[in-house]
Image 1: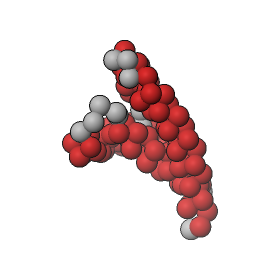
Image 2 (image 1 turned 60 degrees about the vertical axis):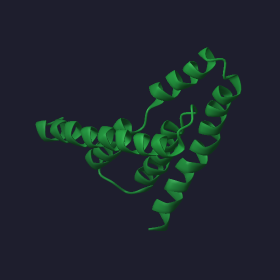
Image 3 (image 1 turned 180 degrees about the vertical axis):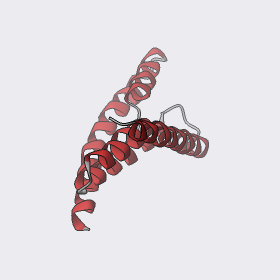
Image 4 (image 1 turned 60 degrees about the horizontal axis):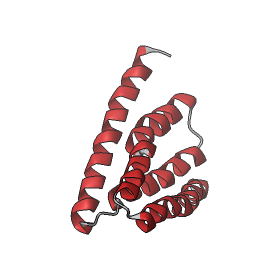
Length: 121
């Protein structure tokens, strides 16, 4: 892998991280609940975006930059798990279960929707 690709991953991954931070904060401010709606929004929109990217005919390097660098930095499995674990520590079992179930129940169709949209182009 050449230096330009590594630089692209660094730059585009940084943009994905900033986008995640901005979306999460905007949602959290509007909703203002203990349930992690910001992370849920980021991960579901990221599933749509990654589905869209995989549905396009991109070069290997373009798919790497868009999918791995941007969407990989934008979405967050570890935060999802940590927030779920935090809810259980706070004895908010139903919100913790809802976080797991809703994320999977919406994430799979979201990825399929992204692929479908790309297929329509």
